[in-house]
Image (cartoon, rainbow, N blue to C red; front, side, top):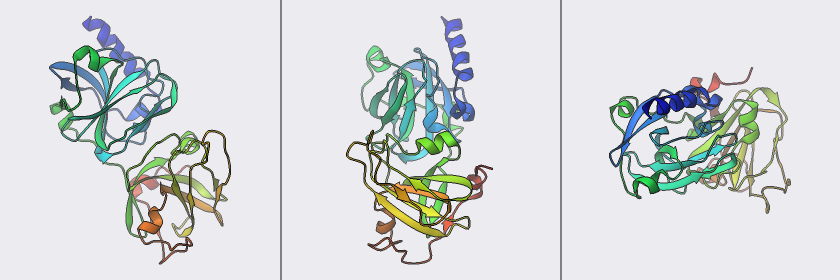
Length: 287
């Protein structure tokens, strides 16, 4: 049995998608005395993609994702080899929510609560081990000794936004699709190699968004507050165009720009708005 689990663990490491390349595992956690050997994702841009093309998990093998702080989390599994039970954990490892990420689910799952960690296990693990909400996962020294890196932070007019980074065509095409909620100061930044006309839309988006455009110098162009379509899966209008060519696009929750005092009721800037992109994000600009 031990050899079989080790073989499956090796398959897990070799069978990940590109998002798994940032894994720093293995890491050992314990739940109700049961040891789980985890592929540990603590940094990088692919943390939402860890289940894509991943083989089926078995008891004793898991995936641990850390975000370096509490946030609404989203995962999808468009080419996975099986379904996953997902435990969303508080900073101290307490289970705050459980969900099932179905096999080959492009829509994925969004946590209803903010959490610092996600632990993916074989489907049905909790039932087999009588694990309930408010149980505590022992994260152990192999995890606490390698704390997760927080999401990168950009600034818009001096206001911080924790962002996931859309730096490749697949990530840009997916964007924030299928998410059911976002933390208040979370968002996404789209990086392009050069200025170009932009015309974003809300296909498969279930939350309202502010879609803001910036030129190559980070200067604000315009922002479009957008509601979800009546049927997010099929309706394609209206769109959110940039009023002139843009190199960077920032998406936040709808109303964020006005709530922060950055624009007025007509979407006009209340001051000079500059997008500040830290070097660790800027280096991902597509060449």
